[in-house]
Image 1: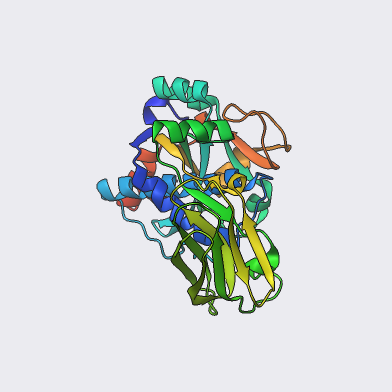
Image 2: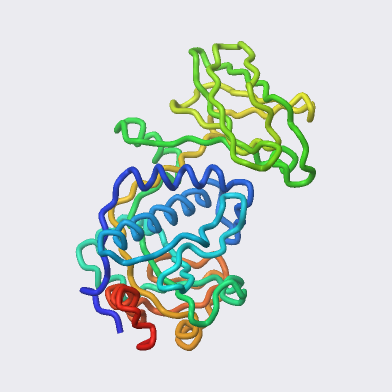
Length: 331
């Protein structure tokens, strides 16, 4: 049984958020929204997950624990598994805790986490991606997010970092119904001053491409590259007027209005790697939770889950020693 002293506490840096943002942008091609979250929430969940995974990898490196990323998910594929320890596939499940009162309680006393739930979505648990001796790991990120426009206005006023995206949600822009060229993207801005826009999507071979275009007021600019999918537009300053992108092939224009821009920056404070179980152990200990069930870290779950209380997990230090000393026989 886990104790509070066994929970691994890792520092947070903005570099983790930036790495998560880069992955989230590229993963828009396949992102499956099983949680029923709005686009900004879905993207911030991806950002948080990548941040937790990278922080854990940094800890493994510092501790001399060997691991590999041979099974790492390419951005154009759905998740398979995150990393491998001692030849065993690992699925690191992460949970963003953004409620201020819960963050305070957790950081003051990590024992708060012991009664939280380690969750695995039912559809993932029932899949054959992980074998029974592969591993589930569970991490928690204490961090803030801008869920309301008022929150974002406070970020602007305080000159805190932000990262704005507007999404091309239509399937034919994303290449999800027919894979074909969109041509070179035509861009135009009604912003009163010049504004740089980053376009992100895929080329003919589905590789990620991006291009930055500087838009003078009301002037049209055509991208240098040919896009086969357009996933997002990004700006570094809050737009106050419409920005449009057009595909001559589709004979269609997308208009991004000021309310369409989403802030996907995660304001991380600290990461907690709680513990782990083999899939077989998780199967034996877990219970099924219906969608909408309250758990300690969330008011309600967004999907059907299998759950184990964090206090039932095994400590990360034990896992590190097993990997370093080839001690899998003691599992």
